[in-house]
Image 1 (cartoon, rainbow, N blue to C red):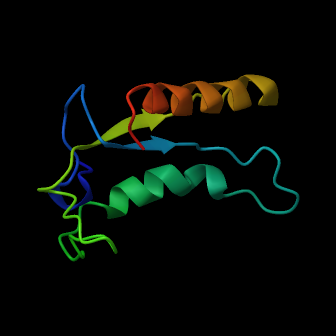
Image 2 (tube, rainbow, N blue to C red; image 1 turned 180 degrees about the horizontal axis):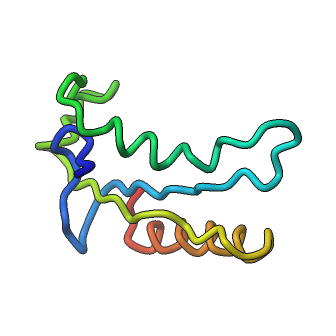
Image 3 (cartoon, helix red, strand yellow; image 1 turned 90 degrees about the horizontal axis):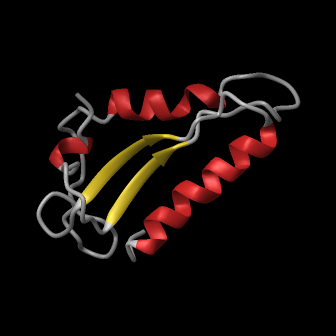
Length: 97
């Protein structure tokens, strides 16, 4: 389970959203960034965390944060970039970040 220290909730209404983009197709040297979203989620289960942001918002108590999963990056680059735009636009439509 990846929960970012208990901050992730299952809710259709949210203030903050995490969107993974496992993509390294345009890397000019080594591959690896595509594994970033999975690695971040895997490490998010630890309880050693600072629950408050720099603005003093406790992510577990003061806001609703969701993980919307990964953008599909299996197609061509244009499809991937459109998928990123669509995912971000859906978050903005909810007036979330």
